[in-house]
Image (tube, rainbow, N blue to C red; front, side, top):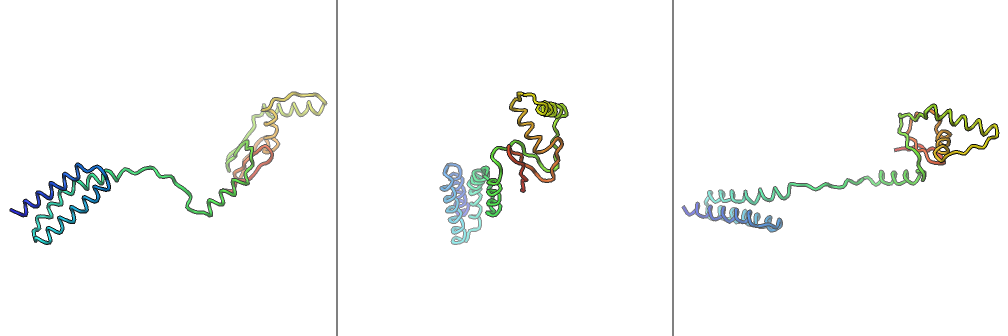
Length: 169
């Protein structure tokens, strides 16, 4: 009878502590103390039913599990310094004014009407006419001179205002 009374008191104290303690660290300390007390009482008094008092610890354990289980999003970083240094060097080699990035295996095709327009302007220059070009047309002629009318690279290419660079990733 005494062992059931000790078990009940221990279970009640553990359950009340699990319900009312809000601080996570205090709850962990309380749970460790109650489990140690229950284990020592069961060993010292030779009452195996005191272990049933650990059922009261279930309340605290469930509360701890609910507070600990939601994980926050973590930021992934490169763990390999060699890879990070290689990427830093690659970024330093990239041109400043990038017009286009052409992935390997893709195609860049300039519309035939735009090609005819570029050809018409080039013939007009050759005959001595003055042609006023908008900014987009100048960029189109630059892009056409860099990559051509139909372009399909084997490696990823970065097209800038002055050059075409291979992107080795």
